[in-house]
Image (tube, rainbow, N blue to C red; front, top):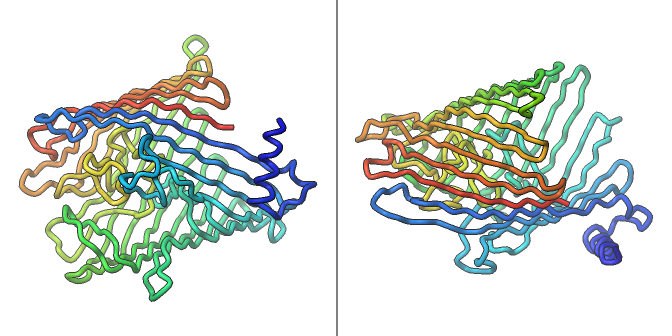
Length: 437
């Protein structure tokens, strides 16, 4: 106990010097730690090779937050992420994170004032987490955004969420990258409507994919208009989301007009049985438009830059292995790349159909089975094919205590015709230990 008290004192004086000694009891100090082992057989989907891709990765997130007074909260979260054996290595993979070699970096540091204007205004300033809905358009994926965010609470269940984030600063010239958004929400009992406006404005040179060709764009601007409806019913839920995207990309050969559509429907239900525990089912349809190869001055693909894609160093999406979003998926040639699409040349946009069941047994055990099919929204030139493949996932989670969880998972991915003729199934096995205290 003495060591814990000393740690509280050290962090209080060094990291948040504004705390008074009398308020140290309000401090909340904790750690989230996840260790994941991954084994992939036939990673490149080629039937002529026998390649295996195996590694351990961990993600440690130390956090502290506390109230400076009854109206002001301050928070800090530091993260370290890496593959075991590559700590401090120059060969650590290129990822979306500031560092992936184990070097700690700041995920969040913010001041939160939730009671302004007679509790009608909630203001957060600093590096913070921002997730809109399920992350179809915006999610920081545990990296944080440097942002100012204001939530306004109005009568009759109406709310407004406004934010502006600096993604990249050029200092000299006008080559910044900014993310802005406004969300109008309406709560009606068990149902909730959200109407969102999201703007990406990137004036710095960046990677741009048009069909199957990757180039460098001098600037990219995208604007999304999104309508989301979701509700929690008795032992059931539904989610419906529809988004329109438009914008412009300035490429070396001239300007490209951007326009795309994203849509998602998800339904689920669950029920308790006295003898067999709790069971649930879910079904999902998700689709993002692809680029029409017949139009050279337009890009019809739906590709939000800051959509949810990652859980640590693993893809997060539909399928434990393929990890599909509406526009990209796991890339065997660049598994940790923030810009790779994971699609064969000519494929664009992803349509996903999925079905899953899960069960909770004796409170501590959860098991699931999920099946997904994936298709390109456009036919690949030359092959006239659309099928990206299918995936079968199995998983089991054991909650040892409220602080320690163990999970095992397996995924079998069956490549579709788009990947060619000489293909074979891919199998992925994962083992995870998660600690929270």
